Length: 394
Image (tube, rainbow, N blue to C red):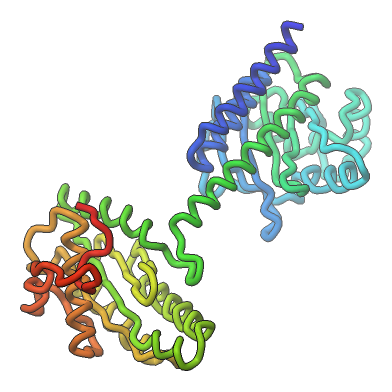
């Protein structure tokens, strides 16, 4: 009874740890550590099956890592043909109406050719775990001085998602049938936690993404711009903001319909994204309606102006609309102290307003056009004045 209570507490602890995670890596780490502790292991890993390239990709290594094992590896992958049980086992057993059971392997298992089926069958029969002891896994256990491991398939949304792997060092008791059964339960808990994390990530993504263009939205710009200005104040990093107004959208909507207008917005969004990619780490966003922006942190003002100029040229070539009015404000230009995101946004907006009024085919740049700073500093004429800053961040 005491053992059952301990395992129940371990399941609850694992579920709670994954629920408290705020990001996928935190969730993966909580899953691996929770399973490792629940099974009395010294090491655990969580891997995802990437069907396209046909490989298992390790997401996290937790616990006592061997030499060369990173906690969050960038490129630790294994071709699934070297570990066919993650695919064959599920397809043959689970697709036939069974459940995706976990299995145990030990460093004492045979290491031979991949086709050493008799040795595999003999060991499997002795332990009753089904098809176990794959030569690659046994070799890996020996190489990393681990005595045994239990591997549990993770099934998510009715499909094989990956695997949970927990190991013990040489000299520790070998996992038994009850451990394998418990690992299957833990894998189901992990699957539920991953599903919850994915849903939360999707909600976060939607909260910061414009649904029509797929670009970042105003909320994402606010958050990134606040961070960028703080960075500028701390070490002088150049922060540049390009604000764009797509010309002619209303005429397209009125004459050709909103469906055509939406396609124009999507196409300009693609142009903005491609141009933004020329600036490392730049954020392309739709602020709303026909207004877009590009936020660059690091590149110099001249580089940003060059990209914005190309943006204007490409926008002028779109089949619909009438090009774009583009304004730029950069801390790399003489625009005075920038102590808030609001200040930089107001300057970029004023530059865009001047470009719109002058029907300029090129960007207008605050600090290089004498009128922009005066426009930015003048009070708005009305609640609908285009020069007022969107929002009220200080």
